[in-house]
Length: 349
Picture 1 (cartoon, rainbow, N blue to C red):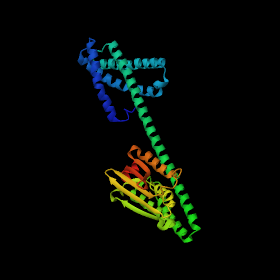
Picture 2 (picture 1 turned 30 degrees about the vertical axis):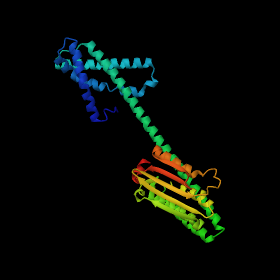
Picture 3 (picture 1 turned 60 degrees about the horizontal axis):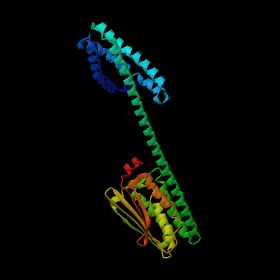
Picture 4 (picture 1 turned 120 degrees about the vertical axis):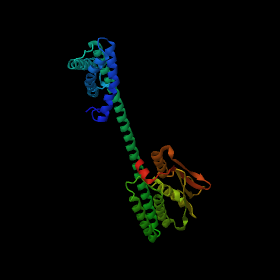
């Protein structure tokens, strides 16, 4: 069905648009001579109504024969024949109205010529409308493809983080089991608590910062069983930012690197500091850890930092930033991202 016929409001607007065209036809007929404008208006009004519906027919031809697959010869022959045939409808309707109303009939040549021009104009407008529709459909498909690609990439990034953490944790438990079985069991219990909490977020792209901090604490509790007093945790959390939404498991790779590449390399141990503050619509999260500046730098800090950076880029683009490096005797990672409510963040995802 033609889109105009699918809505009565569209149909009404379409018919109203023909009022200026009717006035033009009346003027052309009157200017051609032999017919008063009153007779022209009386005869052409019903004829123009019939012709308005006839000018919807190009929609079906345009859909079956797009411009890109139609040659010039085909276009000229097809639209020329169609315009002539439909113009005869206008001419015949006008003569029938003149006969029924007992009015003077308009001259054939001007009315036929106007019918041809109006039909060809209708065909051009239909081609333009179909081009706009195709462009919008292509944009929708492209946007959907970008959304699906972004979601797939985010899922891939998260899928890589979780096995990475589990491998490192099991390795730590295996190392501790040969030294202190009781502490190894305690570590297993804390690890199971952490995994239970993280698995509870299955299907959630974003969580409140307070939940993410709780998961980070749970991980650090696992490592504190291993390191004992060598690992100390400090926090400076602004309550105003605890409700801000962050990508799930965003901090866990950061605290994991802080332990593995910082505290683990210090005989006397050190502190890991978690800080978060809100400034307007932006939340800043800082993870700091002590490290041995004289120790040889690792070839790379693992995939954790790279994954966090990439997740921020994919999700927020230029609205987020990531900075990492030694400063003031500690290794510092600073994340800045928009402060969104969990509900708004879920709809965005």
